[in-house]
Structures are given as structure tokens and as C-alpha cells.
Image (tube, rainbow, N blue to C red; front, side, top):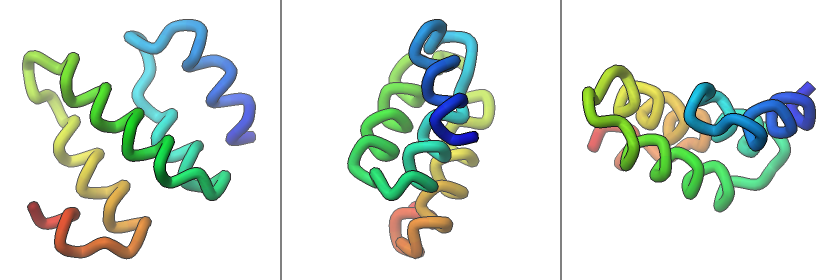
Length: 68
């Protein structure tokens, strides 16, 4: 399932924001963080991106970054 999410999102990255979680569940945390940073950088409204980032870091067991 995670592979399918990545395939879909890579085709239309501006329309989806779950790819960081898919990378995380595939064990590719560096790619997950990079994807999340890209999402945050293009989000001019700050519409939930920081919340999603906190959730991602929480799943990655990084409480410091999750809170920050």
C-alpha cells in the first residue's frame, strides 16, 4: 500500500501530502523528512503541514522535533 501512495503522489505532488508517512512506513525516514520539508515549503497557508510534521516526527520517535 505504501508503494502505491508514493507512486500516486510522485505524479501529482502538489495535490497530495501523505508521501512522508508512506516513506516512513517503508523505513526510509530520510526521504520522509525531505518530503515533509518540501510540503511545508510550498504550503503558503500553513494549513496543517506543521501538524502533519509533528505527527511524522512522533511516529519516528523524535519527541523533540515533534514538539518543535
